[in-house]
Length: 68
Image 1 (tube, rainbow, N blue to C red):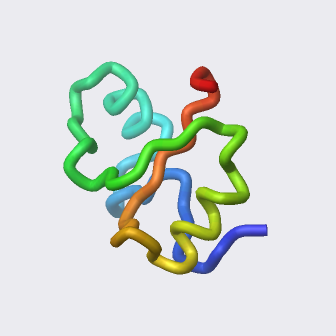
Image 2: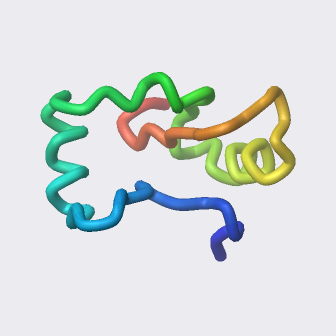
């Protein structure tokens, strides 16, 4: 279940999300300025509540599946 404000990647009109994601993954687009929180994937439930409740001024949160 997704929170109404949650998204994997918001896409500007006219740009297919695959192309945008590819540019982000190649570091051609820097999105770090909008990411306020980074947590390991295991912290998913905590991350969701943090985003939902805007705890600690959470704007955008990234879950890192490779971190523990």
